[in-house]
Structures are given as structure tokens and as C-alpha cells.
Amino acid sequence: MARTASIDRKTKETEISVTLNLDGRGSSEISTGIGFFDHMLEGFARHGFFDLKCLAAGDLQVDGHHTVEDTGIVLGNAVREALGDKKGIRRYGSFVLPMDDALALCAVDLCGRPYFSYDCSFDAPMVGNFDTELVREFFYAVSYSGAMNLHLKMLSGHNAHHMIEAMFKAFAKALDMAATEDPRVTDVLSTKGSL
Image 1 (tube, rainbow, N blue to C red):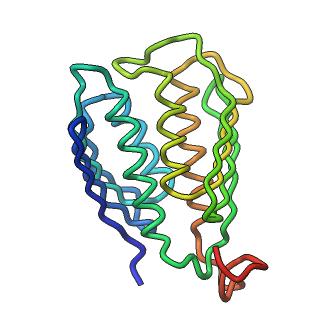
Image 2: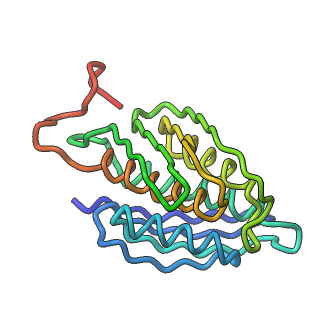
């Protein structure tokens, strides 16, 4: 069965459409109106081998907050829907990803219980037209709407561009690992019998 989902969300602040294939080849079509954010989502798709289409229109005349946060909500919902009943998946994934000066750690548990832990701070307030405070808002939204336990920790780094990109790519790798089907898992990987 194809592990895909298409989610649309429209509010007075944003209109967002996401189509996700967990078993893709890393192709993407991204347009959010925030260049650096587009670049991060393209990297997420490529390094997680997800096919991702994300079209977002938001109130950028205010700032990027609503667009980034709401994209996280829609992407998290798409991940959760595409995973279905989670039978046969590894459930857990983790990755430590280096990018020049930056070293990011990401761990994911697709347990159905949202939790988010984030340990990172930036010296730079902006990267291009992207507010660095929105990194936390995006991943928080993904973790809660996706019903996943997500930990992100910046182990080292000083360049904000490298640090953020390392986090998006580490998340992609960890999510890919957790969502991968394992023939040894015949039902769900839980003593409870459900995720």
C-alpha cells in the first residue's frame, strides 16, 4: 500500500497544501514565500527520500510565523496520516548529522504521543528572510500534529544557516529510519499492541 497523504488547511492567516509520499525518491515542489524555509523543506525531502509537495500562502506582510508554524502542523498531519496503523515500522530513529561547524542530534519515536524537546540557540536573529526563532515553532508543530516524540539538540555550531540545515536534515534521516518497514516487525513495535 502506498504510504501517502494529502492535507489542506485554510485559515484567515494561511492556506497550505501538503502532499507527502514516505516511500519516495526525495523529489520536492516547495513554495512558501520564504526562500530559506523552502530550502530547508527541499533538504528535508531529499535527505529523507520523501516526495514532498508543499504550497503555502500566508500573511508574510505580518511576518513568517503563521506560515512556518502552520506548515509544520500540516506536515505533521501528513506524516501521521501516511503512516497509517504503523504496522511493520521500526518506530524509532535517530541521527547525528554534521554540517561544517554544526553538529545536530535528532531522535524520533513514532509512538502516537506528542512530546518535543529542543536544545538550540542562535546568535543570529535571521537567516535571509527567515526568523531563527521559528525553527522551534516549526518542529514543535510537526511533533504535536504528527503525534511523535521528537528531540532535537545542537551539539555544536555557530553559523545559524549550517545549524538549521543540520537540524532539518537530521530530522529527515531520523524520520526515514523510524518510518522504514522492517520485516521482523509483524504487527506494531509495542508491548501495548498499538501505537
